[in-house]
Length: 344
Image 1: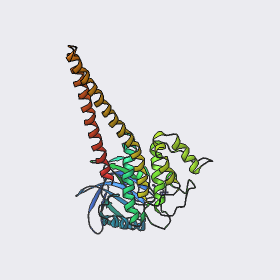
Image 2 (image 1 turned 135 degrees about the vertical axis):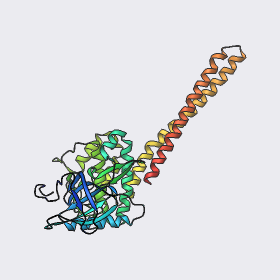
Image 3 (image 1 turned 90 degrees about the vertical axis):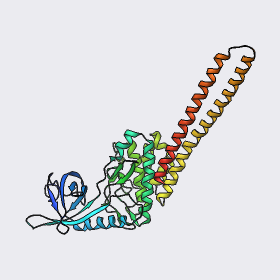
Image 4 (image 1 turned 45 degrees about the horizontal axis):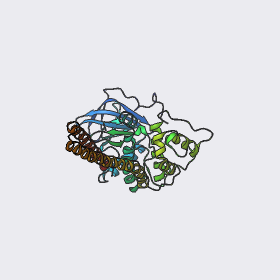
């Protein structure tokens, strides 16, 4: 847990406080507090280069560790799971009695994951989860586990929507003990595994994030606990139940890689979309058959001197609706594949 903020010299720094780097001489003026955790405080600051997020701590070792993680990530081509590292320095207060390490990173503007999904619909929960699994696969291949994976550390940036992580404080080298965790998203709390840094630890947290999206008010572990309790909540929610096979495997530690879990989710999604596509095609075939029958009836009526005037508009109206339906289907499928292109 975090130290008492009243005793923490870098906690609750007031708006307008200016932090000047001892070595690089860059100045950062605090706009507001963004958050805090076990390893320090994060502030939104303004500098000569614009807005940036600054993390400062009494523990220089934790700052050094996080800086090393961000530096490593910056060398991974195409990797954008966390923010970019901008500066590393020390803040020496005016009296010169204390010096605190800090680093400055890209300020990610966006919307918290939960509110984003609540506003735009549950289909985005699956898409953003796939994005997260794609980046976790890269992270794991680089030999790291994120550790403290939870919605509070996730933000969705815009144009196009992209899930990003805000805090790398819990990131741990594979094989070591997890440095930071939050009980609800921790498999050790649920009695479903150890706190050893491995891919399956993060994947358990991904499953719990999916559950949390549907149950924003976190429920506590009861006497039943474990997998049985979690499966009970999955069964009570229609969206979660569709992914039950994937969620159960992730919660049980059966997935050995993020790619396996992503493939499982894609399989569920394809099962949900293919029947709809088939139904649409069948409807279109039925409409074409009806239109053909209507046309034949119209011709017969015309030959007999019947009401040809009334049958012609019916043909035009039916054809117009069919063309509109086809056009909408094409647009929806194009948008669907565009979104998938962002996560593959």
